Length: 161
Image 1 (cartoon, rainbow, N blue to C red):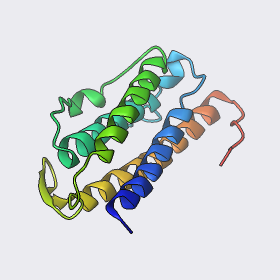
Image 2 (image 1 turned 90 degrees about the horizontal axis):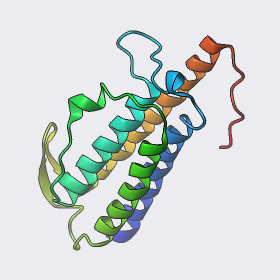
Image 3 (image 1 turned 30 degrees about the horizontal axis):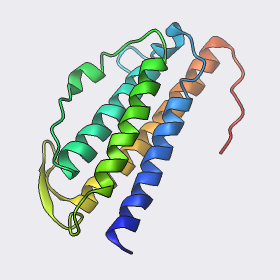
Image 4 (image 1 turned 60 degrees about the vertical axis):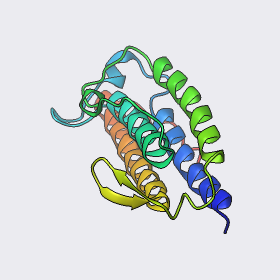
């Protein structure tokens, strides 16, 4: 498989996982977006904010070598009145990431680089970390949404996957 094919495959999994995370927030009012199943658990708004921050940092910053200005701790305190700012950020971020990944020179998936919390990783390992992390939070968001609906006595929306 070529580098371009590997990147496209991983990006497909990553973007679909993030799309499913954001789908958990669709149509929810402010109270639901910021609801936490337990005191120290994450809300849907936090999960969405966090996955965008970590994806940006890892793909644009670590893999593509671009400057990013992530505030990781702020992601876990995030609250918001609607999902629109998150959706807008995701639309813009997707475009930048896609363009940046397309411009990676040959050999970048084999080259090691320094990750801020994980030490030395190859470009391929960065893609694996992001895909795994997005999938974990996809399940986390779906479970949080299910718990929210159970708490509120609502019927869960039909699954489309």
